[in-house]
Amino acid sequence: MRTQLIDNLVRADLHVHTALSPCADSDMRPLQMLLTAEQHAVAVLGVVDHSTARNAWAVFDVAEAFDVRVFAGLEVESAEGVHILALFDTVETAMAMDGFVAEHLPDLANRAEFFGEQLLLDGLGHVLGLDPRLLATAVDLSIEEIADRTAALGGMSFPAHIDRQAYGLISVLGFVPPGLQVDGFELSRHTSPADARRQWPQLAGLPLLTSSDAHLIEDIGAAATWISSDLAAAPLSAREWGQALAAELVARGFSDS
Ligand SMILES: [Zn+2]
Ligand SMILES: [Zn+2]
Image (cartoon, rainbow, N blue to C red; front, side):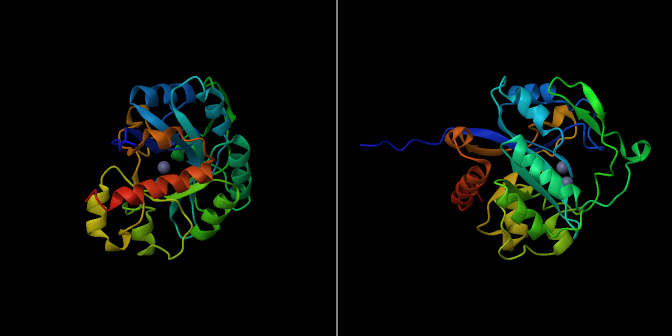
């Protein structure tokens, strides 16, 4: 007879930035990030940059040396002004999304003196160059178009920090678009899933996760989503993993508030 075991839970922080994001600290380099994630008991790490995945290869390149599962991709600002995470399990799929997003960015240059430098890195953290484009800006794609393309490329997507005034789905749109094909809805570290469900009844039954949105090394893992260790290690593609995460969070969501 099978014994019912209580899930062994581990932490997933699916939203941290590298130094390619103009607003992120220049210490946000692959080795330091992965080491910090491991030290803070983060079993699954999502690495993104604004509008680009050009540092994804560097993170994947060194990730095998750490006891941390990595997904990498982009944080895209939709035409409506909503931030959405697009995460992948291979460099190729992340870069396919990078190319798609690049076609929809305005043709503007970064002004590093105002916004910060955008460091292109290798796995060891060497600076290979600077991305000259204005990355922290909106593309001319709807949130649905970003989510649909992410899924078509085999990735998972989550509207980011939906509880935040700035770039958060609820304050920007005022509602959750019905039928939006995403794998969950991310809360900032300032709002618990239980509080969010009380404040926004429309979130009832939806998978809610929490991430750090770390721009500084010490913030990696400062907020995270508890998931089963089975899920953390499950041999699934990014798209399948996102769906499994959603199923697990929904199953738990009815008892966590
Ligand atoms: Zn954001
Ligand atoms: Zn972010």
